[in-house]
Image 1 (cartoon, protein in one colour):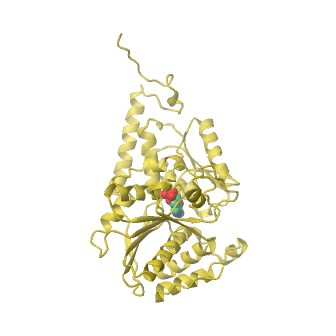
Image 2 (cartoon, rainbow, N blue to C red):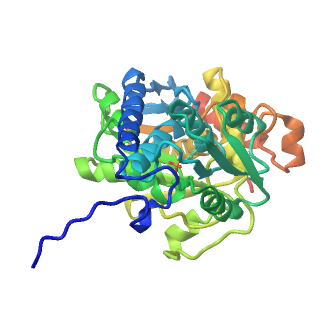
Length: 383
Ligand SMILES: *Cc1c(COP(=O)(O)O)cnc(C)c1O
């Protein structure tokens, strides 16, 4: 048989439908190399995020830590994901010097991707629901991105794909690729960072790590890392109302869909996202929206600064587990995540009029969590 030779060019091969990428074009190849170097330099200049230990004398023998992802330059844990997704597209040969980047997002990812797209000189379009916080829409636009708003959370996927098709652009597709674009074994991913920062604590291996799911990518990374390193830690995923993740966990049914979007920005989805990996999750808790917002307020009171509502969902689950541990005389550490800054939500979750209009009534839960933090006593609420 003869030796066969071929070179890819823009005119051959199905994966080169993206504008501006011709693998035979040396200048495009150089651009990709420089783009990756630019992202790596940005990472090299960045510091790790803090792991905060809460001071809670009433919780004897139970140490509580929060990984503060609100301090990334773009304000949320999605800073890590945006960098990973864009590197993934660059290294896969899907992003070139003239590629428009497109994303479906509940907001935070779009803000972070807009930041990196601007550094790379690429156009960026975010597809989000019209209910997304004004401050996130504003941030995307300040970073030079364009926002395309749709009515319902279930419409973002098709709209993003369509815009990518129309512009010859690249749909970053966080909901599919979050779990695989993240380097789950190392590279100081959020899990490796948590375990490294815990090393000198009294209980260095957390008994529980509590995390909510939007893409499911963070919980996938944490769950895999726990197994990979052989830790005894358990992963609890907390899910808000109107999300199908909890029911999928119980039923294994991947075709579940929800009619309403989640009221907690960043988490809870109307379909079972491909990046949500139930097999690495040890326990799930469904948290009422009122409890998420109540815990958000109680934690903000405790920290003297505002956290977002998904952090409230995380914290409600964390406190519930801490109460169970207390009841069973267990000691150990519990870790969860501050996903983003609450000032993004000054005109929503922190605004009593907005809450009343949305039928969100968090005050009994705020009192429940505040009392638990102060006295270590968990009072069940009548529902
Ligand atoms: C995305 C997001 C989450 C959930 O993280 P995933 O890794 O996508 O599951 C939680 N809170 C906020 C504010 C988010 O933007």
